[in-house]
Amino acid sequence: MHQESKRGWKSRRLASVVALAAITALGLPAATAAASPVVSPAGPEVTAGPAARPEPTDLKPAFTAMANRPISRSEVRERGQSWLDDHVPYSQSAYHSNQYGSYRQDCSGFVSMAWSLERSENTQSLLPLMTDIDRSDLRFGDALWRTGHIALFVGWNDEARTRPVVWEEYDYGHFAEQRVWSASYAATFTAKRYRNIVEDAPPPPDAGISVGSDGTQLILNRKGNGTALAKKGIGLYGWTVETDPVVKKVATNGGVQLILTKDGTVLAKDTIGLYEWTVETDAVVKDIAVGSDGTQMILDNTGTVLAKKGIGLYGWTVETDAVVKQIATNGGVQQILDNTGTVLAKNSIGLYGWTAETDAVVGKIAVGSDGTQLILDNTGTVSAKDTIGLYGWTVETDAVVSDIAAGSDGTQMILDRTGTVLAKDTIGLYGWTVETDAVVDRIATNGGVQLILDRNGTVLAKNGIGLYGWTLESDSIV
Image (cartoon, rainbow, N blue to C red):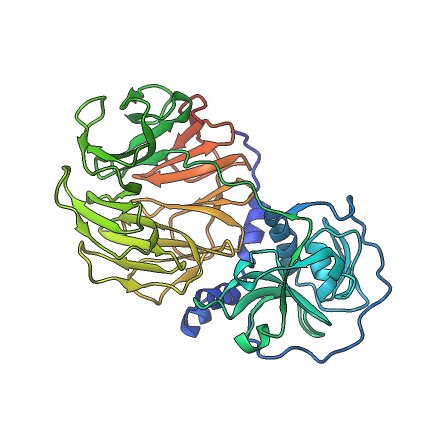
């Protein structure tokens, strides 16, 4: 693990959070927004655009390394975010220069920069570079276009998918920013896709690292065709082979180990060793989670959640209809992410009692045994709170995060889009400590232990927040 710290850059990045924009995307109340710093406010829902005006025709070349090259959606996000971070003011004559080149500071110049075009186009000269798409197929980095204006599509602000969240340069006296358009205003635009945009590579399979509140580590050795290993204690040695090569996911907490086999069957036990696994389900499961209080949650192949306490085949209680895509549990709290991107939570086993926690904008969830809930929204922003209910979310980061984890001691870990890990143990915007260089693929934390899987497929661990102290735990397992 390299020791060079990126603390300065990261602290500036995280401290410049676009707080109200993120809160608007989450649909959280104004009372929550008032407690957070406002750097680039989203403002009210946009119902009309600026007055029409002649567009630039000089089409000054942009200083970029490659001409209209293919570009991934994640790179579009990084490039677009740079202008939001720089608070680039609207202008039809000025050009903004940064590490991504020099581009005209209007709507089409912003999109030209985000797409890494060879020059700053206008809305008409962009047309040959785009193709029409169905609105239902809009993804981050696509565009909403009409004569005289264009904006980058970020996501949807409503379940009906009528109010888009966009990044745009839209008028004099304003900066590049994130805004929400009304359905009526959005209906005047056409959905477009840059012809050279390419989809990001799919994420690697679940790397299979887990750590429990009692310090048990459970890892999945994919190079061993799916063998689980476990131990307690930080260090390279002491791993015990737990299974034959049949496992595709592992989870551990509260002294319980869960494995999901390749055929979809769940097994559990509460000791380290090869034997004593108990079959928990038929072969119908696609995800597993276990909390510090021993609560087990499973997500079956229909999208239905079931839960129970105790190891054994029986006792499962149906928790939901078939609408769920992700589950998390810890500290007696159960969290689910439904197929619309909405988070719901409760603190008891049973079909009823779910409380809606967010609007439909969330991509990933995590919960700690102290009740801390973490959510990662579709823009890459993390928010946190420690109570069940719709209100109380605090924005934790800018839109730069790709993974989240929460532990039993209040530790939060985030993995940013460069592969760098940061950690802290309080809820709030500040206090993040850089933990690694940009080399990490997966994170886990619990019981005071942090686990990371680096991009070489190697596991490292430590038991304190800070850049130093990582111990090599394994050879490459992925």
